Length: 255
Image (cartoon, rainbow, N blue to C red):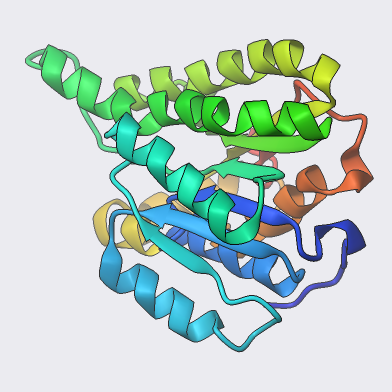
């Protein structure tokens, strides 16, 4: 991964990333590690996460710390946040990246399925923020980045429950930016387009569907997980110190 920009304030920063074991999250872990940050990441997938740690162990001064965590268990999430802070110092940058974009229709969808979807795609964002907020307040500084999606902006018919959660992330971001801004804490969102993660390629991508989607983009190439690294590094760093309550759309200019 090339690092065209180095943000000196990210060196030795304590960074926590949810869903960091694969896909966009793994790219973010690597990006922050290459900036010299102390990165902890939470994931439920042990094998891929341990492989990522091994691959990045000698990339920079600090190997990433993997903490196996089921984000649907709020008590476990809170314990993992505390563990990351003990290892790396108080969290100064939180990236709520974890998500699961299951497809569903209207009809036959249960309350339990709805709750399970939002227990991954929305609820952990709030409780992870709550877990880091008091220490950020004491320090008078912090950057929180919540991952949303353009899915709720483009009338996609295949994932209404996921889209509802991702729209909720924007509302959560705006409200918490207002609540935490007086304490020097910035809260922003990133809304990716269709990113070619291994999960997407395995479950949803076909040549025809990808070609049709790329044709809707102003920038005519498929998006990769690495395309989200630069925007997140910028929002995490002091280079964006007066940016909060914003949603940065990173989708190649979908029309």
